Length: 352
Ligand code: NDP
Image (cartoon, rainbow, N blue to C red; front, side, top):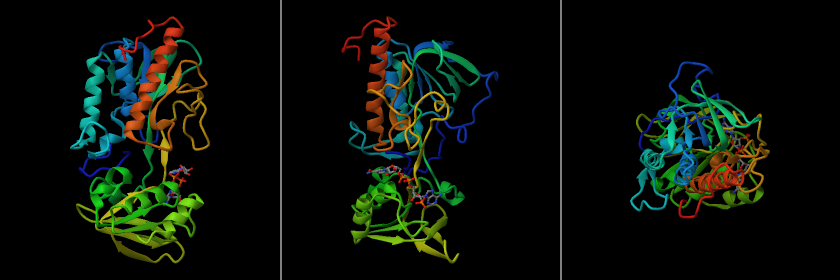
C-alpha cells in the first residue's frame, strides 16, 4: 500500500528530504504548535500510518506526544485512493480518509499534530532538539517515522495521470486491472515482483527496462521470464505516458537506436525504487546499504531514546498495516525507555 491509487488525487509530498519538502528557514516567523507546547516526552517525526499509530499509543500512555507531520501531512496514503487491504474496512476506504481518521484518533487522546517539515535535529544532547517550521522543539524521546517516497520517472504526463492509471503500487492497485494490459517500468526486484503480482489480474504485463539485463535477483528474473503473461521490452525508456484523462499507453524510446514507438496499455506501474526520507537523521543515525535507517534492537537506534518506525527503515514490506504495527512497537519502546529513566510512570497494558 504505497503510492498509487485511482481517485485522481493530486500527489502530495511527505516530510523529510529537502529535495521534496519546502522547508521553512530556521528562525522564520511561523506559528508554534497549536497548543503552544514545544517540548514533549515523545516527539514523532512523520504523520503516515507509523507516526500516527505511534501517536495514538503514546497519547494513550499519557505521554502527550507532539507529531511533526510535514506541511503535506499524512504520508503516501494521501495519494492513494482506494485502500482495500487495511484490516477493518471490508468495503475499502480512501487513503486520505484513513489518514484523517488516524489523526482524529491520535488527537482525541491528546496528541498534538503540527503540519510542519522538520528541518534539522540535534541528537547529541538531552533533551533532544528538533527544528520545524521555524520553531525549536525539545523531546526526551524521538520516533523517526518519516517514511519513504517512491521514485518517479519525472514526466509531466506521468504526474498528470497519477491516480488515473499511473501507480507505484501493484499491491494497492493491481486489482483494478483485471483482464487489462499494463506496463511495469524498472528492472530491479520491485519491478519483477510487481510484474509477477500483476499477472494475477492483468491479461498481459509488459516490462519496460532501460538496459538489456535485469538488476533483480536471479530467482525473480527466472520466474518473470518463465511467466507467459509477462513480455519484456529491453533497452527501452518510457518518454511519455499517453492519454488525456486516463492511460492509453506509453511512448518508448529505444536506448540503442533512439527510435520511438507507442505501446498501448491501460495502466503503468512505475517500480524504479524508493527513497527513504532520512535527510535530517543521516548525520546522527546509521543507515543500511540501501540508505534506510538501521534498527539496532527492536525499534532502537544507536542513539539512546531515538526509535524508528515504518517505511523509513523498511525497504521490504512498505505496507500501511506494517508501518502502523511498527508505530505501535516504537511507542511502546519509547514509553518503556521513559519509564526506565524515571521520566514516565510505568504504563499498564490497559493504557495501551
Ligand atoms: P533497485 O534500485 O534495485 O532497481 C531499480 C530499477 O529501476 C533498476 O533496474 C533501474 O535500472 C531502474 N531505474 C532506476 N531509475 C530509473 C529511471 N529513471 N528510468 C528507468 N528505469 C530506472 O530498486 P528496487 O526497488 O527494485 O529494489 C530495492 C532493493 O530492495 C533491492 O536491494 C532489492 O533487491 C530489494 N527488494 C527485494 C525484494 C524481495 O526480496 N522480494 C522485493 C523488492 C525489493 P538499472 O538496472 O539500469 O539501474
